[in-house]
Length: 146
Image: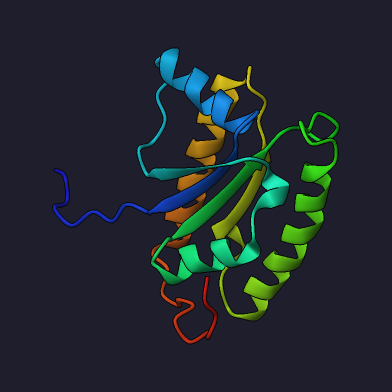
C-alpha cells in the first residue's frame, strides 16, 4: 500500500556545463533511470558556484544539495574543480556549525561519458537524504541575501 503523504526529498543539483551536465544529458538520451527528485542548475564550472547559492537553496526549502563537476585534473578551466573542493569543504564546516547535517551537501565528479555514474550518484544522494529525513532546521534565521 502506498502512503498518500510519502515524503520525497527535494534536491538541488549544481552541475558543471562541460562534464556533469553532459553526463546527465548522456543518462537521459541513454534512457538510464534515476530518481526525479533533483532540480538541475547548469553552471559554467563547479568553481564558479557562489556558496551563497547553496545556502539560498537550503533556505528556500531544499532537503539536499549536490555539487558535481569535472574530475580533478580534467577541468575545462584547468583548476576550477580544485578551487571548488577547497571552497565547499569550508562551506560544509559552516553548515555543520549551523546545525545542518553534513549529508545534506554532497559533492561528486562526473565526466561527460559517465551517464551511468551520474545516475548512481543521484540515487546515492536521494537515498542519503531520505535516511536523515526532511530538513527540520532551515537557514531562515541567517541574514544573507543572494
